[in-house]
Length: 68
Length: 267
Image (cartoon, rainbow over all chains, first blue to last red; front, top):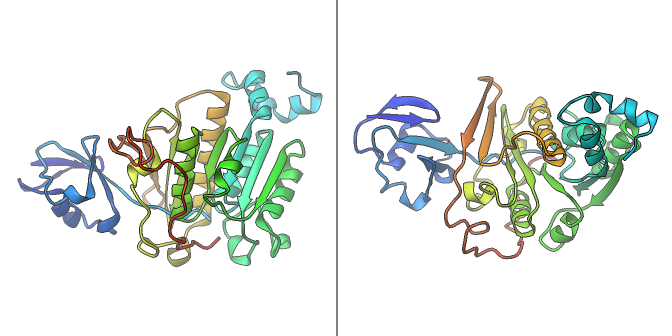
């Protein structure tokens, strides 16, 4: 199936969960990433149970604390 | 409001703009902006806002200027090493535009002073280097209905969002709680290119100017990310979190509070 990850279309096997996608995309800080799926935030407790579907759009949002 | 000849000349490039004009410049001259952190982000933001003639600029910072700051904090100078950052910044802004009133608040932003500090300002700029402060600014702005610009920078990357009360998500919608200290790298550990503060801090100043003048579209409901190595900007649409603890329909945060001590980024 095709997913749109951070604006780029990529092919992934059916049945992929948000947790598996985070692993596959090698997210640097997997336990602290925020995920929006089709314009809705996924609760971090639901990453393992949220199954992605054809055409889903996923954004990863990362903490960025610097500025001083 | 009528301008002096000096003002007409100083702000001529604004006044000639259809979107700003004399009316917009008058608004800027009456506006009050508070900048939290006179560092990598706060320095360019403060310089551009002072140059733009923002009438009152407040600066909050508890640190002194250190040699390692000067790679990016362009409001300070070798001559002011050892001085308090707010005083060093005040001198630079006064030299740039003596017409601007600079109010200095030496010290850290805390839950017990945030509401009083924010009260008299029209727009808040988050130029802080740690998550507890970023969450405190967000909560205080949501609770007191103040607009603010959030930003963060590290290495070759930066991001920002604008919050306007009643419009779009807040910072806590995106990130529910601060990460534990040291869970996410800081600039001291990971480094940051000085010009990164220039790019993102200037964008924060731009958002403040647009808000104060009342033109254009603000970065509400979006996170703008900048990857300098790939030279890519992305504008990511942000949903609201349905049960956001501070801006949701049934908030559990009803007053500002201090989070765990920061994993401080080098100021």
